[in-house]
Length: 312
Image (tube, rainbow, N blue to C red; front, side, top):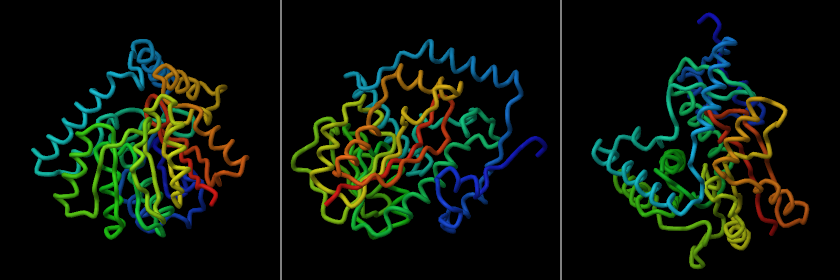
């Protein structure tokens, strides 16, 4: 299509911060199968996108970590559970509603207009495929904290059907939904209640296990210290976080600056990366990867990759 570019395998490799030969065949197949074409907006279109973001910022009243948010998440995941069951267990019902189709996205510190209305979702599918194969191939079990609809765990179970997978969330509806997925698809998967701001002392992470979060630490409103101490004490093989990371933006870039404003107005977590960096300097952890993917949704980049492990 005239005026359109395509995010190809080389583009994904650059986003993930790896050589192209580190993309497994399954990722290459997903990249070929999906429409990753996009175009740069005209000046007037770009101005319109920026005005839309500014207006959303003006009217946004959501406060991350506020007490009422627990009830909001319970209602949201309960609705997802009911839709999943009523649909006859359609996997499409596990896509969180905050992954919105048919919107401009962020790519390489600017806005672009995809031709595929589900460009963001397709990008995340490639990210999961690469990430899970890259970091979890040799672990004994995997725990996801803040598992939401269970979409990440369902993807992980397809790749590693024999590994024990454990999801946790702080609202019952999420736990019920993940256990429903496990029962329906006969997966080696289970879920339990867990509050990252007040970790349960009896929660066990067995030797050889990995943990990950995917847009979950963001919801702690910077109250991550108890969870971090919990992980340090249990010494998983590797800890992987896909999270918005305000410290990675460039405040001199307009598109980044808008994201910083959104991140801080809502009160998403910040300070986690500097805390990991300090622990690395102290010799308590190995900080294996800090990767800004340079990709995100209309309002912010929610997909940055932090990987670390406790020093044994």
